[in-house]
Image 1 (spheres, rainbow, N blue to C red):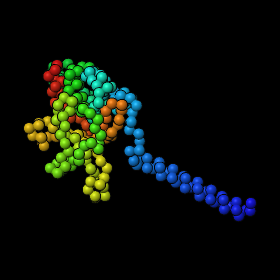
Image 2 (spheres, rainbow, N blue to C red):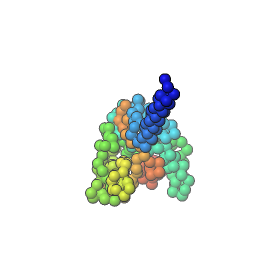
Image 3 (cartoon, rainbow, N blue to C red):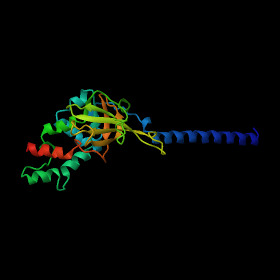
Image 4 (spheres, one colour):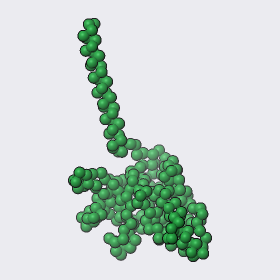
Length: 242
């Protein structure tokens, strides 16, 4: 083989390697840009999923057991809008004037040192606000625009303990094009159903459509979430139970 042919074949080989590398790079870029390419399936129950994420859900998994909901989260077909551990810790550990333990101390009642110091029925009440019957994915919910609820109102749903909550998909804007951006679930607690459009406690969802073997998990944003959606109500319930 002549030296010219060798050089020509070498150039072709380098070209193919460059194309392959470019395709691999694009695939990686696409993966990191599009979370949808990640596998949302979890080979285990919903409770096992929570237990597999100790940083985010170790406390929530404990509360599920304290509330007597562990069997439901192992076998029941439910959708769980899961708060993170930090929300529970913020409620119990907050040391400001209106914090849980300060309120209890002012009332001369026992403060909360461990999760079991809160009545299990209270944990059950607030966890069941986050649970809905059946498996519901982001695509199953209607659009909501919180600034134009008369046009895009989302939809009201009954949680497991018959609390009314509004759930909808926010269509974000991109490059000044309305509703052309990514889609994100929101959930809103309606404290007074006689005034269904007032006083909402709205929380955005940071990740959605995680699919264990029973049901669906959507995770509440750490920046927005308030466990039970109304911390004052939770604190009042705990104080009344002491």
